[in-house]
Length: 192
Image (cartoon, rainbow, N blue to C red; front, side, top):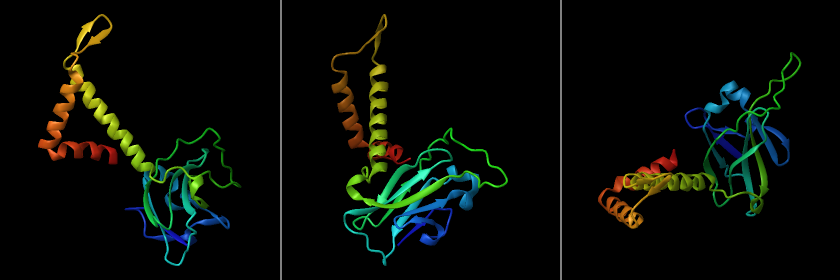
């Protein structure tokens, strides 16, 4: 049906590594995989196996859960996108942590996989959306730093020349033409 790999941490694992909850839901207990160091696992590669046919209107969704927190959507694979490397941004452990006694299983982080309607899921390119947000923040920071170098102070107000945006944009474009690594540096920040 599907398999997963944790880059630099595991060999490929198939569905048998997961506990099947019902026909469409599986859980991987991270405690059995890495113990309490689940938050050090930053990526998962999930892929559909050749023998599995997923209907075109369905997706195999991936969720993560830190101890005591709610499940959080990470991404999904479909027949049109049969594999994906997803970033695991583990949520902070929740306040509902339970003390474990000798008769109880330890509370652990989990990775959940489920078959879901494609239209019910958030954008499948969550990482790209976050990357765009980081690029926008870096460009904004570049603009701010440029404007700050021309600022004057009038009480509690910063005063900048009227043509400052035009000057910054021209300088930004010229540097991008001159130095191909300039724009790549923004992209590299978005990927990290």
